Image 1: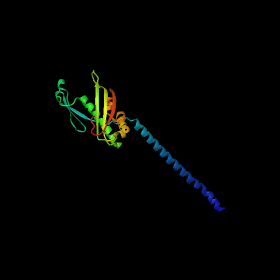
Image 2: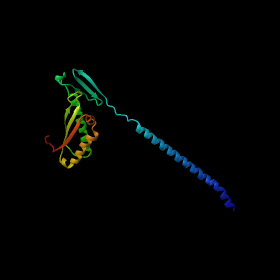
Image 3: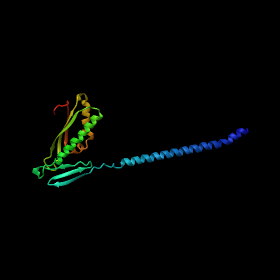
Image 4: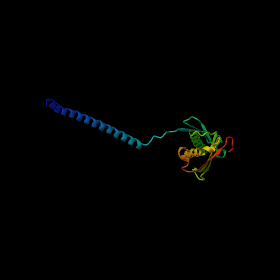
Length: 199
């Protein structure tokens, strides 16, 4: 009986330990829940904040008459000029010509990069662009016809992937295109060539 009495007497003590343990667990769970709520709230605030845009700088300096020298972050100078009839010296491309060159370079880099990631072997690539401009100022581009020429052995076997590469640059990747197409309708196609074939 004495043993049973001691066991009965000690039972409240065991219950107290369990109670303290449960209280501690609840406190830990509440703390974890609170931390998770704070993290979720922080992520929600961050998602609402405007994303900082990458900045690109360029300096365009007058060189006399209509000629300018342009230098951007990469450090490569480009001379811009107008025709002799417009008071220039014809020492460089016209600004709108440079826009077309930038467009061709941008979309061309996309296509060759995508083809390389797809492991499509090719030996050459070229982008031809013909543009229409508005007759009244600001004389923006109103239409673009773009042709992607790709050279390589047996490209017909990979035609679906070539078409996908061109589609991706047109619909997603080319930054220059997605500025120009705000004013210009864009038609595009691709042509596959055997190595050495004229286009």
